[in-house]
Image (tube, rainbow, N blue to C red; front, side, top):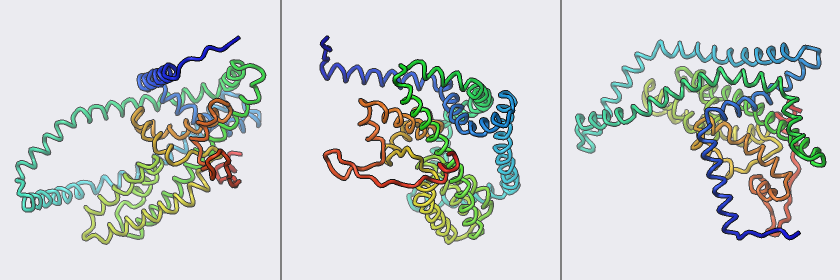
Length: 368
């Protein structure tokens, strides 16, 4: 039987229409999809601990509850530490606010003298900007309320995913033919290992970066060094964009609390050193997983994730693309896309690829 060949323009149109429809669905249903995506990633991350409890003969439901309780305890400890630092910061906030107001008045006077732009006009522009941002503030509050509801839903989702883990895995096996079972098993194992390796490595990286940031700021004598260092490490987990925000916070605090610009220069040098260590030592040896995504694709998918789902999309983009690459590697027609996503750069134009076998990262050794 002959297979009907459709013209190229028709196939391209159908593919583009499918991508547009998929993007619309993902954007419209983000309030449902994003919590589920985070829950699956967290469940994969907690699965080794849950499996350990099962191996020591703890029943399934108590094992899941104990796993989630331990995760809550760890996250709660971090939040308690940050809240204590925030309380200390809030005690000095009135003085910082007064000094910032004084500096802002000086800045307005400088603008008036340099650009002949009167202070009333500056105030008028500022008020217009504030009025135009009311909608943004409202959406931010709405996002915060949505986040709180998500934080309630995620533990419920994680509980159900762990409890029905066997049912979900069996479903994935049964929807494919029996001859594809080995490929399904390999894809599931590699996807689980990739997500675990990436998330564990990311947490280890954040812990080390927090120590380095705090140490550098303490040496420079900056106020609230530990709080700013930890916040910088958390922001650094946001690929590519978080590092820029992380360095802006200590520079702003130094502007308000320090005279001169020597501290600013020290902050820039300190963060550059930390970023060098992070990019050339921590990320290759701690964060990187066996599924490598090249830098160009990483930047593009992070920006696309941010445009689609905001900050949540930025965090989810890399793990989801890593899983897609695993699937593409196992489907013959999609293998060129897997090569496009990967970080192996061909040395010849005719498809001959030379690569160097690398050692397992610290995160992979932990999750093995």
